[in-house]
Image (cartoon, rainbow, N blue to C red; front, side, top):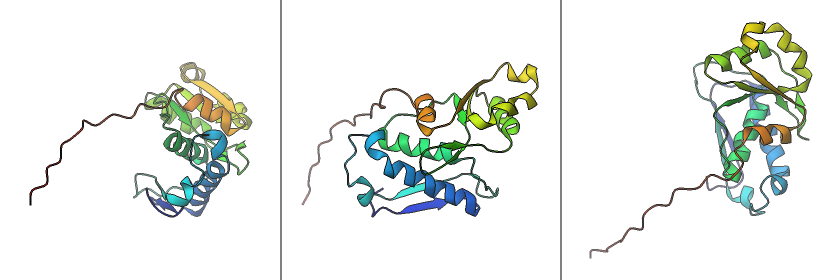
Length: 175
């Protein structure tokens, strides 16, 4: 939204998740020219970003949503939609590394229960898939990544989303 480069984070979030949102924005800002070459250089100086994590009554904390936040911001700036059939988890660093998380089994099974078949996860969590029963694992595709560019390549659709054109309207001033 128009603004002066601020970040608003809402939802019942702990300090670690708030820090993840700030790290995600910092990564995207520092790499904007590579992520979205056509983005005006002053875009962040003229816009505020609001990240809302729904289900406000449920406390949330931890760094696991970092890659999802970077992906959402990259989608916003590029116009490339996030694929609806992909789930993702991972902590993000300021240099774009994807760090391991806890609870991969639970996160992957929750994604599967919601119809997701592809899960992007940190490469350092690859050994954790052994905790998922084979009969459930066979229906999931895991993409293990170490850098955020790998996440964006898998999670974002290839072409920018076409923005719907609004029909022209005639305005008549009545005095």
